[in-house]
Amino acid sequence: MTAWEVLAVADRDRLGEGPWWDARTEELRWVDIPSRRIRRATLDGVEGPAVVAPSDVGFAVPDAVGGVVAGLADGLWRFAGGYWTCLWTADHDPAAVRINDGKTDRRGRVWFGSMHRPETEPLGALYRFVDGRVETVLEGITTSNGLGWSPDERTFYYTDSIARTIWAFDSDPDTGDITNRRDFATDVDCFPDGLTVDSSGAVWAAKWNGSRVVRYHPNGAVDRVIELPVAKPTSVMFAGPQLDVLVVTSAAKEPTDGDLAGSVFLLDVGETGIAEQPARWQE
Image 1 (cartoon, helix red, strand yellow):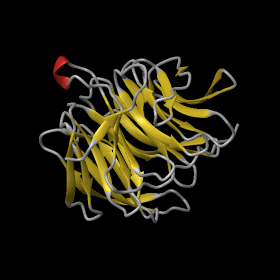
Image 2 (cartoon, helix red, strand yellow):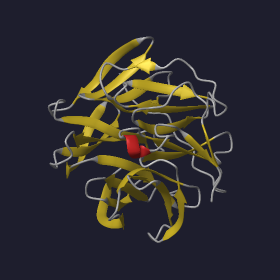
Image 3 (cartoon, one colour):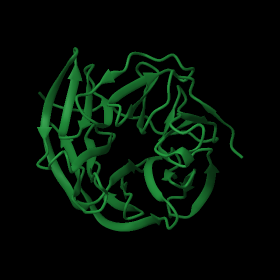
Image 4 (cartoon, one colour):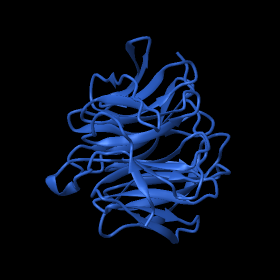
């Protein structure tokens, strides 16, 4: 069994998500969606002040000039200098649909999706934000979730949790265009959630209601299964100065989710990740 420890911060999350390693400050950043908090801490548990968002916060990534780009319920926002600025307003009703997981590609584009709050209708979408504008990439998504890119940027991985599927796409790193969608991995007993790709090209995916993280070879074959003491791991990301610590966020939704539900886990899995890039944007 892979050894794990719990990040020693003051409290647990209700729905922890979106871990992101900031190499500039050597801090882990993540969000607690319903608590509307953007959190940050060193891996030894020294926690900085949280930023409280105006609404549910699906993801948050630092930008290159000292701010944070975040997906709030109604669209894309930026926090800097103590103030929130709206970058883009979605055309959905935030009472029925909200922004969920998001991440930057290695060119600094921000990719993010939306989800139907009851998770019963395909009213969500996948978006791409670059140079001040948001483009719709895919529609007909129920719960937009984990996303990532292969080391050569030629394959894009994307998850719709309710479809229980991680898809793979051909990706053009110069334009950001994706084509040739195909099934990469599916689940029958749980829901795929957040994911990341390691430096060898393997895909790591958290399994909501599955109590585990799974590592897939680039061909989709299961390589490793890591069991965790919580029912709802939500996302994964490599962190630390050497990018050799696998961070796993989790949720505490039900009494049966486990005594450590809502914790952030740190694992030594013998692999390394790929450095994240700050968001590129334009005022």
